[in-house]
Length: 330
Length: 302
Image (cartoon, rainbow over all chains, first blue to last red; front, side, top):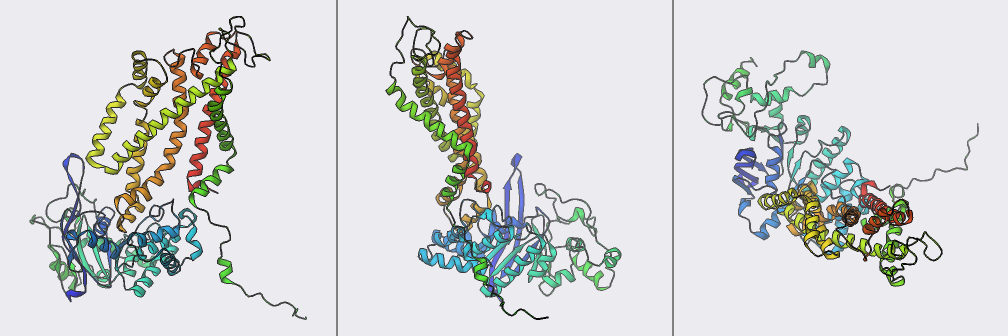
């Protein structure tokens, strides 16, 4: 079982310095395993640390503490050459297709850049591979000499995908790859990603705040709140039987297409605002907004605990919540 | 009804419908082409090139800018002196050519020094970021707090008057604006997603700076350079007008304007000859700068 774990993230934290010597705890003690070949969806509100986690995995940020093991190796301890190799195995697709392509470079040069850095093949090989990649992502090789500004958002995102694929990665962080696109284009890109994953055996970390998109593409889903994971489960399980009150609140915010159902359904609304990640309350981070919070202040952050079938929940009251669900009082 | 049988459907060639016929061009080719299409910028460019030729070759063809002729002072434009003479009988046309050399030289040299210093200082500050950037920017803040005009006037009063002193006084704080611009550009480009993407691909710092940051920062830098040259020329004119810059018998646009205004309005040609040329040169540099900015931005291309 353990040999098909690709990423082993342990107690990972990433703090940013802010004014007055305070720390912004963007990622705060996350432990997580990502299995080879799966799509792990990561959801949460804006500013909950999803992107920071993704960026830390691709080494844009150095973690403040904790460890990331990739294929059994701690990525903080990689040598120069190993680090470069890691850079070819772990890639990223960015959120904003308008900002993620250098406006001064042609599409062909953008896609070839990674191959140049890793010295893959001769220049002709790279050009051939670049043409192949363009076709693979649904563009044509005629586009290679064009500049990014000549393309639409969806086409640019395809270029971004081709750039990531050029270095033959095993793992791709998709940082909200569709949130800047039209809904019709979103579906195309999502389907392209699924198709590529099947074809190339990729492992994906799919970061998004659109819960329906995540459900569609993910095998497992993690819910983040203020830098911590509050619930991790298989996608269907999470959407059908959410346990953590925050997950319930998030899911009930998804509108239902049927107006009759929409008007009559019971929603679990979240009250209040997210506390600032600079002044995170002690104890359970969600307590200030939780309808089930008990008055007795418990010490520490609730740990992720397995409640069967790989359904992890970080909540002090999880057991009683499950019991009440079983009794049908939900 | 009889069907027409003479027509057969033409098979649709999907390949052909996807084909792109317009020849693709590189970035620099695009810049040149856009600039060539911009008539205003081209006229400005031609005019500036003309001024440069005049500045280089003119004084060789008309060397007698210092020759006085006390029998013909303040003569209006005539066949002999097409722009008339000044109060000491010097030919205004010859002096204007000489003044073009002085003023352009000061503008180009001063701004090129500012460009190099500003790019280095700002580039280093922006790329290093963090503490180094903080210290370097505070130094700039301190320099900024000293009034520039005061420093220039002080330097020109204390040091020996002349072109080198004038250039020194124009550059001592003149690079600050460009340094800030470059630093801001690099700083914001560094966090751009395409720079991050290059980092994720495993590119080194040098590669990121050279292939992603500088090419994208160079546009505003060139524009700023082009537009700051008239600033330096104008500062020269202003200081010479105050009698602090270039002093007679050397000619510059500034001291010619000063000489002209002292005879105003009796001898109008003395004032208008340098004033018109000065204004046209300023306009040309600014319009060329505008054209360059549009040409360097691929998004502005049609």
